[in-house]
Each structure stands twice: as C-alpha cells, then as structure tokens.
Image (tube, rainbow, N blue to C red; front, side, top):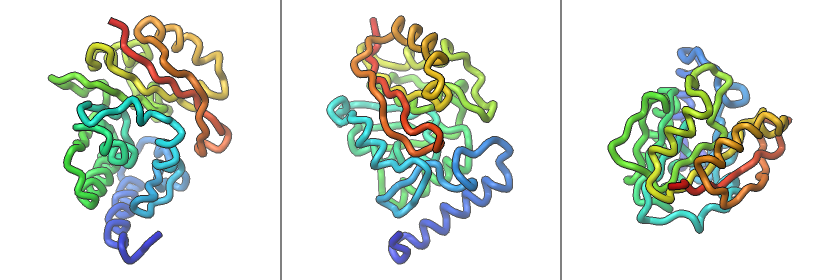
Length: 222
C-alpha cells in the first residue's frame, strides 16, 4: 500500500469496517471481517481482487460508453467503480449500509461522476429506466438470510429491468460451483429467459475451497 497517498482514505474505510463489525448483525463476506473486494488502484487488499476479476471475466468487448449498468449486491462498490469507466452510467445496489459508505467514500476520492450507490435490497429496488447490462456476481442467493427472492423471482426481476437484447453477467454462488447439480435447475430457467453467449469457468480466491466459479454472459430473449 502507498500509505502516504491513501492514508486518510484507508482510515475512513477501515472506520466503516469497524462500524460494521459492531453494528451489522448479518454475515460479513470477508476474512476477519475485512474487505471482501480488493482494489489495487487505492491500495486495498481484499478476498477478491477487483482488477483480476475484471480481467478474468473478459467482458470489455460487451460494454459501451453508451450503456447503463446495474450491479446487484455491489458490496463495497470497488468493482462497480472500476467498471464505471466502461459505462455511461452504473448503479450499485447493496443492502449493507456500511459497505455503501465505503463505496461512496471511494467514489468521491476517485472523483467518479457516473456511479450511484443505493442502500437497498434487490427485492425493494425500483427503477423507472431499464439497463443495457446487469451484473449478478455470486449474488442470486446468500447465506446471510437477507435474500428473500426465489431464484425464479430474482431472475425474472432482472429480465424485466433489462432493455431488449440486454445482457446479464452472471457468476455462480460458491455452492453451485462445487456442487454443480445445484446449478442445473437454475441453468434451465436461465435458458428460458436468455440466450447463452458464453459459459466458462473463472479463477477465484474466495472462499479458499472454491478455486473457480462458473461465469455466464447471457442475452435477454424477447
């Protein structure tokens, strides 16, 4: 870390992590209650490094400065912020208010103007506009008990929020990766709503017993 350049930012972000540790009753997706997402650009180490994740997804050719994006369950927003440079506008939705504080603090520090973070569950999120690209990265079900949607409800809402021919970037949750049979019913429903453009495995660091996840690029059927 470049402590001279980022010292004040890190102090604020770690302060929010400490607030979370005291006040947030749900499960925290990070080792030692630290950062789930890492962000080398600001010198933050995390369980899942943002820049490496973006490289592994190989999605740059699917993005455009004319597009609006939505990141469901954006965590501390590092991946949302990094990806914002490929969008006209991107919104990150996250139920944990302390992670939203981290996201907003980082956005302001980097002077990112085209990104908005909202403290909301996906179930309660509403939008008058539709999106060109939606990210569902290991987020269709959670072990913290905060996800209320069934998988079909979750995907159906994504479908309605996408424009015609819109794209869904979908990464499996950990159990679906090491127990593939769990993902088969989900995949069959995805096929009802979407055309599979790409289906491959990507390397991941967290949790340690899941060295890969399945990553799909899907186009909305009309």
